[in-house]
Length: 282
Image (cartoon, rainbow, N blue to C red; front, side, top):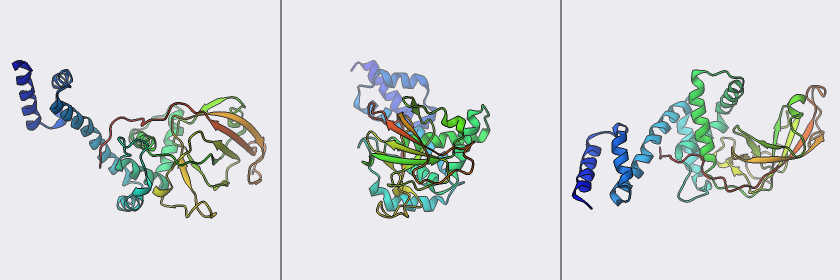
């Protein structure tokens, strides 16, 4: 290495020890990029990558406290951590993301995120939506890192108007752009809505049942929810629209909310990788 480069490295290391990570300026990052082949600078850049999300995760912890007892969430996570396996050993799901999933299943966070998604779709933006959007992204990113459970069919029950149902036609490709929970129980668990989704998976589904406050007692019983989450970037083909629901319960208003069963087939694309690059442990 030339003397000039050695001097640059020494000056950079000295600056790192004397300043906090967020204060590192773009010229310093440019130098680190130029000399990225050096092992010590690689290690430095790796630490730098993981520093910023740690602040974001701590912010998310503050948000999660609004929706459930964070100590209870941590206990649920610790009791069931062994059941949550990573898709990639080099990209484990972050603690904060798993805590967010606990809050999503156990508290009011799911309804708040759903409300944000619905209102935002109408062009309305509110200051609190920024925090909820960050938490949604954290959950989606964490889901993309959890190993899938090998099940071929999952189900979901919703309330749709006839206009919404009309948007589902056989052969059409759809994508859920929202956090979408399902059950891998052999039967529908929730039956209050007028539409049953029966979804044939390509590679299984992410089970969040171990992280649920209302955990399943097993697929053999009718008391368990067996909750799963769809990858937010998955696509599906509409196979069929059948009259009636799986459980046969009529709708309260067949004219406006006709009972239907929508059958979907997941399109097997490339493996869904982690949709956010950087994360840190809480």
